[in-house]
Picture 1 (cartoon, one colour):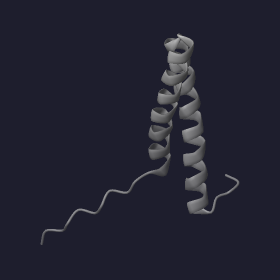
Picture 2 (tube, helix red, strand yellow; picture 1 turned 180 degrees about the vertical axis):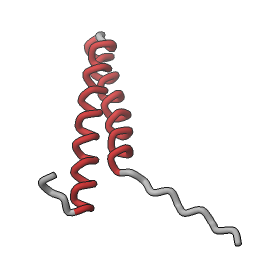
Picture 3 (cartoon, one colour; picture 1 turned 90 degrees about the vertical axis):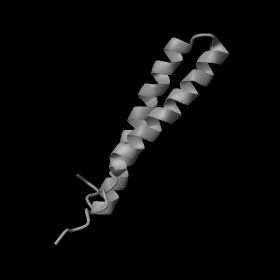
Length: 70
């Protein structure tokens, strides 16, 4: 008998990191265009977006698993 494949599970950490990357890059480009220094502000925006996205994703995963302190 052929089984249907299970639905792929989404990972909150990877979703949050990718959203943080996109939002951070957008904000960095906007600030960089305003200050005429796109290279600096894009890298700063991406770095901030990745770290904030990773921390939010970890927080969501820990709350789902009830591991608040680990």
